[in-house]
Amino acid sequence: MILVEGTVNGKKYTEPFSKGVLSRSLTRAEVGPNRAYAMAAIIESKLKENNITKISVDELVEYIVTELKKENPLIAEKYINWRRIRQSQEPLIILIGGASGVGTSSIAFEIANRLGIKNMVSTDMIREVMRKIVSKELSPVIHESSYTACSVLRVPPPPEYDAIIVGYKSHVETVSVGVEAVIERALKEGISIIIEGVHIVPGFIREDLMEKDNVVMFTLSLSNEKMHKGRFYSRCRQTWARRPLQRYLEHFNAIRKTQNYIVSQAKTYDVPVIENIDVITTIDSIIKYITKTYGGEKNVGKQES
Image (cartoon, rainbow, N blue to C red; front, side):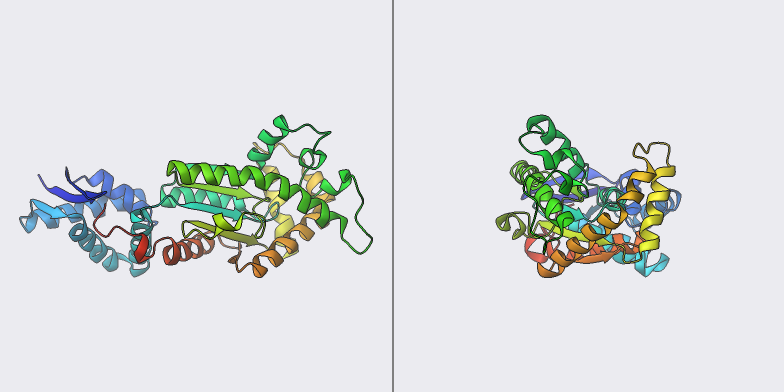
């Protein structure tokens, strides 16, 4: 039996080497399940060939990275990035924003899967909870979609202001209260979570929360209007889709305005803007950024597994 030694919160532990556990970690670096298990078996064989019965986590990682580099240096880099993020000692709060249809839900799901984050919530869900608490009479904007909130503004904006953006900002301001509550709870409980949706807009989340290294925000965009519109066609073809395609198409110009506003806010507040054309490229960009901030040396326990 091969034993693996590690440290958690300053306390040492020993556990048996497991091909299953190792293969699952390799899938985080985009190694296919079958290949991941085969590589785990190879690593186990090499350890036995060298008569190793006890090995530290750091030494095991060196073995793994060496084998991954032989397979594909890019995969090795992805595994190292995943390890750095996993070793960080604080909960990770990832905020992914963007207009309807740019793919925040899909990317959030993929990031959660890659990083092993079990908690994910959409701002639409937060808004839905708030709708049950706050009546339509008290806050009519949250009872509308983000791109139609302007239709229920109590005071029409001056002619020089875009009503769609004014309504959208009012909508975001209200839902951001719920978003901040989720962030605060996650930080307090030490729970990593991804929050995604149209209400994640730079400048609307409290500054004291955004200043934390373990709270990171990204803005997704689609500059190509035809591609953006195509995402709605694709979404509404799915059997689980409940919203009619026609509603999105009728309000497409308003949705594009909200996207332009979100992107402009991201540039103002120095939030990364990622053109979400290719899923893999978007995921890699997000993880690399997180590695540089949240996965930095000051947040990493070097010997933890």
